[in-house]
Length: 555
Image (cartoon, rainbow, N blue to C red; front, side, top):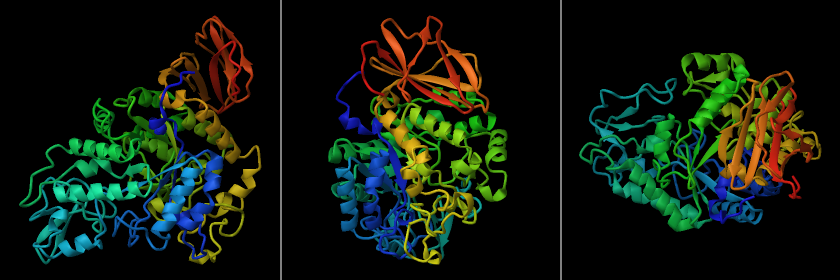
């Protein structure tokens, strides 16, 4: 195994865990999760193997968009605790080997933010130019992001007769980053939270942030939007040395490469691989990995100073907008045939286990794939125990239900009566009675135990975060075999997307004086001049390492 000084690029081999404080653990019994409750559960996250905790918005908010409508960028919502409570979480997490990042939502504010309240109705307000105004909406105004909620990206301010831009909801007016004062304010926001101990940010809606509109009486555009993004990366580097900007960039491949710095690696540190995620679900619908392979091989722009973040599901809808209409309908038919399972005409509001009808073989195969793909795995809270969704809740809220800690009525999330919970608990087969941490924690055959094992093997194998990816040849269409090579280290992983067991021969040159070890069992795998023969159960998987004959490492 190659050993180099890679500590400042810790995110290359991180395990990222996303959670919403208000639905994770309630310490004071008011039905809303809080930082005091999160602090009580940090040992659980350390036990799971989490190395980077991603906090969804915790700032003061009217809560019309689950915290993404912010009224103060420099505070903690009082329902969740105080700045002191947050700092204690950061300190404790760091003590347990976890870094903490938070959502950086700088595309817009709440319409109740003091800046906008000052700007609204007063063209002479010092905060008027913090937002984007026009006398008339542009003729080529694009389709709203949420077409079932908004019919325009512009809203009239009756008092001044001008329209303000809102790419998302009308109650979220867009900030004007062509204004240098706004750009300075964004730097102050970042600096404030970094000073309190954050190790970086998940940057919300990055392309929208950089798609500037002309401002009446102001500059036409930000001269170079990507230079601005690079300046944020440089600012982060100066303040932390090893901080991360994890960007939400759901674009085509060539456009994604630009957000890494177009070969320079000086913009976003990491990007979510939305395209591979969408192709994964098409692959699952077809039981054929060809489309996923195509997506992985199309990756561009990543390099030594950047990384792809892999995920099975995130905190929003499971968007399928990069599939064509026919492909999207395939995925809808397989995993979300009911209208209530779909949203915005382009996505699903479901978690993985119900989509796969609770088949433990298939669920485990997907998570095995997540941890063995090139890049950094990202988990959404509750995935490690197989939580489901609550389709009685509207839109994205269906997957933002309380964490299920035990089999109690409220899943151990809160001592408050169920009717007072921030969000309702999932009912039925995926409710706390059947799916919870307590029952799985000491069960060696549980999904939670399996996920801990995956994390252990992933963390012991830097090839997954650093290695060169290659598809390994064989003649079984339903099986994906890929390798990752880093220095002298090489891992080979096989996944069967079909329900039937298969035997296959993999054309693998092991090399003189080397052998193949099954990482899960520790047993040697027979290798010949033709390669290796693998047996895979239906939806089975194998993790293999090629090692020197004299290597005594334990796997």
